Image 1 (cartoon, rainbow, N blue to C red):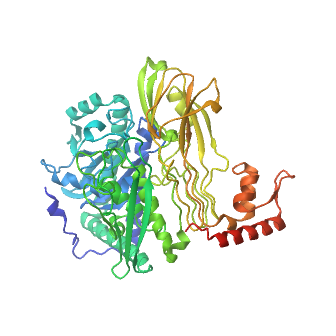
Image 2: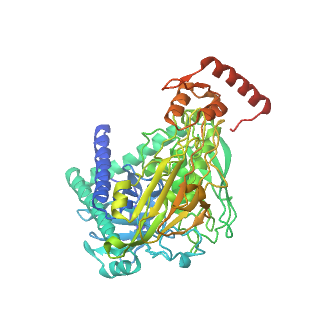
Image 3: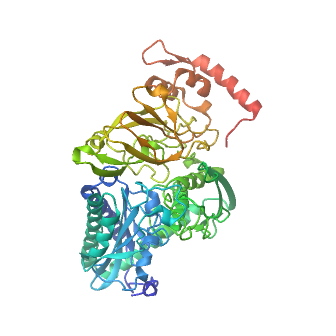
Length: 615
């Protein structure tokens, strides 16, 4: 069964889909996706998937084009068709009961830690859909105990198993040799196998529900619906693009250097709007060649990040299907760090760091277009501080059993947007708030670690008329045996930029200290490292905040007062940055309206004279 058999989309002769039925079927498919997601969450074994929800599901039509997405992680799914399509070229063909595993960034997947389980959905012998369940593994066999390896010079030094869309089930039964290889090459095999079963269950529950839908309505009606719904998504996106002016705009953004290995990565983004044809073209070809490190993007993450940056400026009810996303053309170059990584260059961090900068850059590029001001947005927080590190070690409570798991704690990153302050649990652009923070209580029960502190950093805000979320300080210590914490801390050299006069975000950082000596005796750690914390030591993380949006001198003084009263900002910061004078004699504080008006007038005049504005 070859790919060519499914490129003709003219199905269902004489069958029409009226609007009510389209609404019913699109809602039903959305609910199937939600059930797939819930299946993974409820049955996964790792905290990374079961608590943090570092997973996504998707339904693709018979051509492997995304047709329905439940709430999910943008970098996982705005590209899911690329992960599914290699199944068409499997030498054994496609049969009912197959399940494919694709984690290969060279074959349409995101990075090696994202195991994507793909099931073809047949009805009466006819291929109708594909279900896809993607879950980020706690361990994928890297040469270091982390799913991220920023300093890996190539795939071989990275060390992960590369599964290029292989059949891991046939006839609904496991291919046991593949399971044995995975169990042998992964440090926490039981945890991996539990997550594998969760992925299988998710793909299969979606398969069964879609088969029921096909049986109820008939294959011809369902095929016509798929065709019509993709067309509807295209028309909705074209309608939005036609509201925009024609032209080409540029934006530049940079990722920090890796000391002693790699200079900073400068990213050049060029976007062209063609309202007459209804296309946005994002050209990323004018960027550096692939680098000898793990920061290279792959085709899937480049496409997803570029699409996400533009979709963040679109209405929330835009259909999340290929019909809509196909109007966002992404031009890439093979062998490019922001493009399509060429084998065997490593793409170990393809879903984070540079991808996050790309999303921020694309969404901020469109701040130059007045027609999109209502959905203006600053750069999101830089990523992978120690609060989201991969921790590993041995648990003395379980006979020194090894553990590996990624944390999602103490990472804020939400940018200011026009009309709204930044989202505290946003995490970073690639997740867009789709991940949950790790529960401190459950984490301490599951792993031999102690959270000593997790709180916002006062004055750690990208200030603006609309503030970013505040930065966060997170401190973690082992409870007995040494603990390693692998992180890739961007945002120390290149702070996330504010927009429309907003101030830049807070600087990230990593430190360690001996608990007996106190936090004042902390020593700085490298920005990209996998340090060991011995018993009696702790690792300290400062997350990067996003940038602010709009001039801080235009912020509502009562919002400034509220933040000062809550301790998010100091009274001095309120005066120096926002020009708001506060009377702190009362418990709730009070804005000195007259003094504030006079101070703001002076500050705006000084800014006008200096010409200081961050557009």
